Picture (cartoon, rainbow, N blue to C red):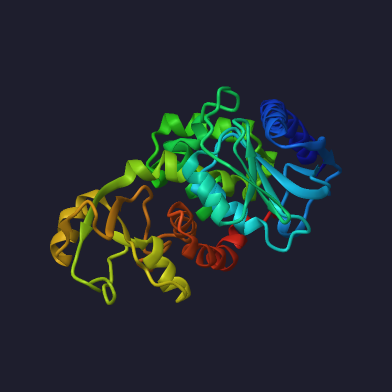
Length: 363
């Protein structure tokens, strides 16, 4: 146990050196930008933060500011980029917390500023955009463009397409990290040589620990999961899209897919898992060679505005692993977050609690 803790300390120090300077600069630049627009008494102070809050949440900072005589305290999340998935994660994490979540970002574009305002997520960025809704204090500034390049960090290889396929396999199939590289390559459709360097990078980042005779151990699973669902819509999902289609109304309701050829994803899978959602977008993950047959069997016609999206499957299920015609819960969860649709948030939370929490428990 001592060796594991010592390794984690070293890894955390390395990761902190990579990220801390960027976070600090974003914090300072955003604070200064807010100060130029609003009278801040004593600026934004950083207070002592509890090691871990409810549900394992760990915000970047606890902050305090005084605006027009009103004291405001927040749990701050500092982000170089802001995506719809990150917005959903902020919404999920803010419940039952003592203080509201406060987003501090490099840049929040006009569209995202409106999204955050509608969801009542306070934010500031380095360009001077801001939303603070703590009556009687109300501030909303949008449309400013950043002049600084701070926070533009290259995406690590492990969070690009090949790495995301491997991480997906590891989370969905506990223990896969201990199988032979050839087996990992075959199961995740990643080249054998690529498996090697992705494994090295996962170890460097502290997500895989060498336990000696006990083999390898996947760790920091919750962080890894959040990194995966954030990167998936940008780095992997777009590469898998085979087309957009339209079928007869309700064609999918009684349809059973052959799980070795195709599986339901997104809102349809979520509805079948929870009975809590009325699907508007029909998502199918299919083996590419099965696409034409799938279209013919279900009378689906190409339509770029259609309500059916078909994506190429990036994993290789077996009857034993995936007996149902639904994709793994992790992918359903990521699909819901990627829609950016508020109505999917409650369903995503149910799937997280019922199916995903057990996958990311630390042994």
